[in-house]
Length: 202
Image 1 (cartoon, rainbow, N blue to C red):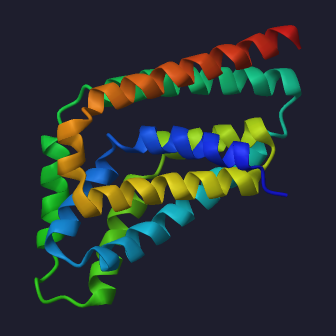
Image 2: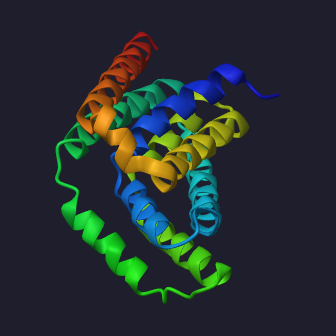
């Protein structure tokens, strides 16, 4: 049975973790060159594949003894908080150049399948071992509800991709990425501390 609370929690965490990510920049750049729905068909499918991989990893983590699992979850949340804080400080110019190179590799007159394939390929390669994939595996292990976690994660990733495709630059003028990443890092630190307390209590 679906748990709306878990879906919303996972959605919020994955959404803020993905906003400063290179894949959002890739979606933004591709969306300026090609029809957004074509790009989203590819990026959206790639996100689903990555979430399925993360859920499988989360189920493996769930096989650990309860106390050790809570300790691992605590470490991963704290590591994630550090990474997302650092990612929000980095310059995105290099990532934007990479995305632009991928976009220029597709002819301007390319059809749906070519554009969707490029969108899928860019996300499929870029997301391996990414913060949001690790976070999704971590949340799947924590909540023991892969379906709710999977839905929340996919919706969070899709939302970021759509925002980037439909006007990411405008949004970031009003909501600086540093504020978003700092808020996300604080939430992850709190979750990490709670998991550490659970691990200590046993």
